Amino acid sequence: MEGQNGGAPSRILVEAQGGPDLTPVYAGRLEIRPAEHAALVDGRPLSLTVRELALLTELAHNAERVMTREELYRSVWGRDYRKSDRSVDVYVGRLRAKLDRALPGRRYIHTHTGIGYRFSPEA
Amino acid sequence: MEGQNGGAPSRILVEAQGGPDLTPVYAGRLEIRPAEHAALVDGRPLSLTVRELALLTELAHNAERVMTREELYRSVWGRDYRKSDRSVDVYVGRLRAKLDRALPGRRYIHTHTGIGYRFSPEA
DNA sequence: TTGCGTGTGAAAAACCGGTGAACACGCCTT
DNA sequence: AAGGCGTGTTCACCGGTTTTTCACACGCAA
Image (cartoon, rainbow over all chains, first blue to last red):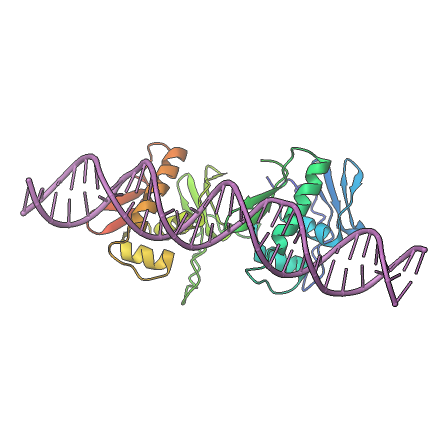
């Protein structure tokens, strides 16, 4: 089910120590283009803030995988995670709201209680 | 894909003093992937809580061996065991229920009266 | 029958996640 | 400089889920 970068192995992995992954992601009608700082639904841009886009990108690059808040926080925020920090939750909430406004009914980000979140275009 | 180590018994034992064993377990149609916080039946994920998964993992990592409640409690709960504590029994019950719902008829967790439980993929 | 060990439903307690809102900060405009 | 705006961070409340604990039922052996 790893639909993405499945047949076309054009993934460039240059994340040795810091740089974010700029590979685009296509998930149904949603398209994420980190290199262009853009996320599109049916070709129309979603208006996401920098953090929102970074979090969405990180999730989408790890589609189908449950990511802990710590993983997400470290890669998106780039600093150490304190377990009382709710930033990830807040941003997931904002992403859900914007995604739902653009694609009502569709669910992209799934909660795994006690662990974290998983990006999956459908379920 | 790196993780697989398919049929090869490439068990890595690095549990020196704290970390739980994240080695995957394959038991017939049941597959346990602690590193991904997941247990699968025929590839479909079982929805287990973190405690349930931890207990199942501990049992499965010691398949065919009778484990006392004390052993199980100490390694899954990480604190001292009081012999009046029924937590292990309760969670074994919940695991059995979920496993039986996914694989009716199959029995995985066997009771050894007066001692504890044993994980064994078959009768 | 009594005692022990286990299965299990269900109540109680603890924990976790969704979210509105307040606040801080930088930037832009007037 | 003052105000407004957009973004990011943090907090608190609340409802739902998970974990823990309790109580009773049942089977078995003495």
